[in-house]
Image (cartoon, rainbow, N blue to C red; front, side):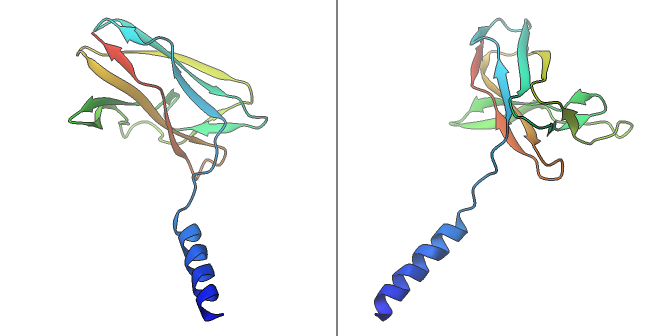
Length: 135
């Protein structure tokens, strides 16, 4: 009897020790898979949920981080910074709304975009695009 209680306790502790990220209705999509260096790379941030969601922003612009694949892992490449003169707070994205933007990357490589988003502006989670190539 004591052994079954120990097993149940271990299973319960393991389940509690691996938190899950809250789901977010925000999608970050790059509109293409291969781009020439320096060419505009279009992407879209959309809210597919029935309620407002929030994305990290610097002033009126969404804060997007560009990551580059290097040495077998994703490494920060550009973006994510906010000048102190701008308000750094989440931007509200209405249900069904989409924000379209472009970036330019001067160096060849494999990249992806990342931002912080969620339904609670105080608990944003990472949202990552699929990878794309710049040649």
